Image 1 (cartoon, rainbow, N blue to C red):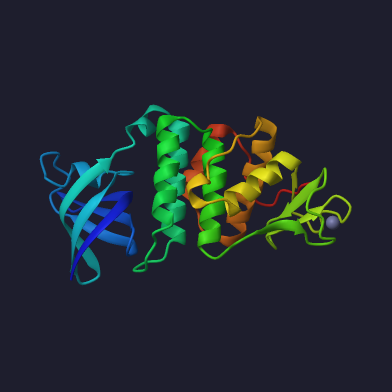
Image 2 (tube, helix red, strand yellow):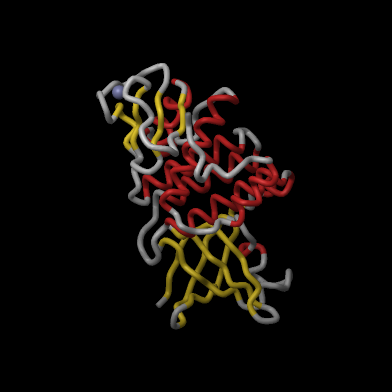
Length: 257
Ligand SMILES: [Zn+2]
């Protein structure tokens, strides 16, 4: 079977002496695994387009369980990611999350522009890394069928309150009057909740189009990461490394108040 796809290289692993095994997020077939023969050599025709984070266009042939990359054309390299270890690690984490959340062999048109935007802002350093991380987490979880309900307090229906809590287990919010409920809830100021609503409900192209104070962003980042960790029972290595870089404790098991 022959395929022409656009996609982002989520992960590259060496395969044998000279090949690369690429995990690609494609527009029409979700996550696919594809071998680039001889691409370990920088002289190979597919070397440039089969590096991690590259967005490009690929001609694939199916061979049993794997695809073979026949031709490739890189379009965007996101070279700025290599300038900063935190931005690079957030990009790697978002790619790992996509690999876990995006289905295989199914159309994934909405994930691709989302990841391209995330990599662009991280590469250009025009959004804080934690903002890109939190918004990408919430949006990808929603696309994957884990849509949080951020519209109103699950107890009384209040839309706004000085203090709201996000409950990662139930993916709901509760106001200060109704209380945070069981452990694990994350306290949200008005700004943090507004930003989370934006990341989940705005037009996909505007997912990252907001600003936030450092304190509010820290709350949003804690809530969104806790939400991911309640749904994904995976050891995401880039996330653990990011915590060591930022000296952040894991949010798993923490309580709000
Ligand atoms: Zn309430």
